Image (tube, rainbow, N blue to C red; front, top):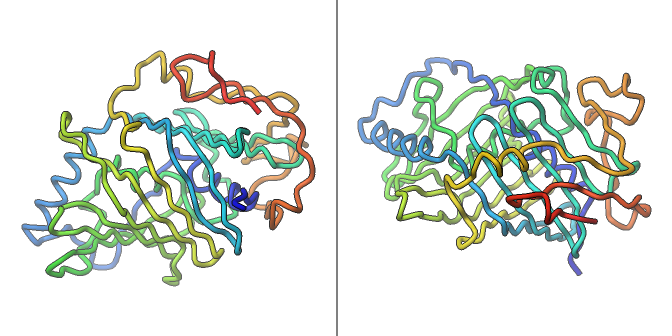
Length: 320
């Protein structure tokens, strides 16, 4: 039987739920813009595609994977818009399980199986003071979705082969940690095929492989449709698949955005500021949370209603 893993859901929250601040890229030793003319041309086309993507929505996202020997599945709805706006709402067996979101002011995430019921919140300006449990900054999910252009001044051409080439960039997270990102680009397709993220000792943190792209021929835009991710250190893998018929590019209206990209109200749920959890007196920050190991260890959750969904109006909410 497939089941959700609370630890995995918390991991997913860290990955995608705070998509609001891009790490500041610094300079790798002898870092230079790609000098290979073909490389420069391919990167320019990738960036042209990325800048065309103003919004992305998919009302049928399948998330499947494994964590510490458990397999799990989650159905989700996802939306993205310029200016750090992101929302992912997940359900399992008809129940709301996950709400990850961000806008120009704050980030938030809620996991149904958290005890006590809690929504974690952080103002964007406070992210530099937040120590997340997993050193993976959320805006990188935007890179995987293909909406972030490649800064040629911040990437060096690491390897150039007949079939692919790789770019390397050193980055500083909002918390001050140093990470190294490798981007793989396929020469034949001219598209990104994957990413790897390392700590400053070159230990791999996460690997992402783009399995398949979705092409919107009417707009001349493509976005990843299926991506596989792997976190070796925590023995976690997941596959995120967007249903092609449900993918909508550049169709989010202002009314839709006003409803979707804002934090919902929650019944019987505590609000904890990740940047100042002690002052709230209502829980702990992510730096102290390690989550239950399996669903069997979870106690019964307090009924929670999540008001708000990826819908044109709040008349069809996700309800637990």
